[in-house]
Image (cartoon, rainbow, N blue to C red; front, top):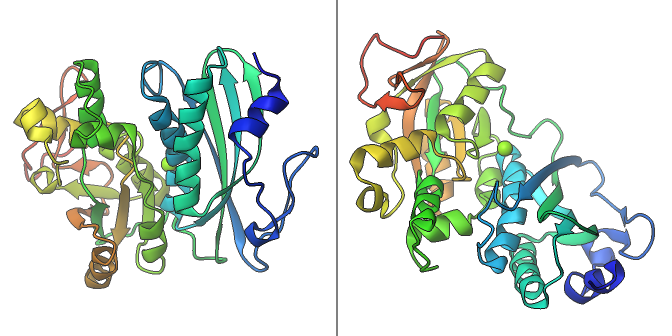
Length: 322
Ligand SMILES: [Mg+2]
């Protein structure tokens, strides 16, 4: 195995970010020194991706690099923060040059597209695991949180749902065409950073859909102390999802599947038009899928006997138990 220093130098620091990226002292010392924009708040989050747990062990290395950063950036997007810096803790079973070259390419391309500077890292030997810390900025008092949903707000999602779960299902069936829309959604999710910023001042609450729509909506409801009425027929399904899985499994994937990395938000009805116009400028649809209510729980879907979500037709008066 290469020395830690060789690995870092070779694959991750071809262009050491400088003052123009807010980096006062870059890679090579014990710490990196950063200069946040005066008056802005720092938004910080970390996510860990483990081979065989969070992504298939045989996933393309470039996709693994892209994805490891994307899932962390998605948390910045959910708060409406602008991404600035990241750190990577990389644990590898073996140092394979071709794998590392592709992995770092996927990672650095997403850094470039999102204006994120990789400002430090650590490499160790062990089961393949990628930990990515991201740092972004947002104005004081402006961050989108999970706790702001109010009775009467609309519930909406960006983009389409079910692509993450659908893509994973296809991968497990042996589909390997990287251009397949569902596989692309699963292997190379795009964090909705620009959309998150566009929703500042309009959304009352937001979260990124990583655990699945119902689970993540549940987090918003809990933090906000409210309930919801969902219209499962309104869910925007990912391209090719019904064809790949069938109608009912497709809806199940959209409701309960994870790894979509779209934004779920609540907003007052009078903000909908402006929010839609701003996202349309990004080529991103915003679909209303329900409404916030004052009674706890989620009405419109029912939890099945086996723990899955079995019934998908809205049934007035029959909601999920609080
Ligand atoms: Mg999140």
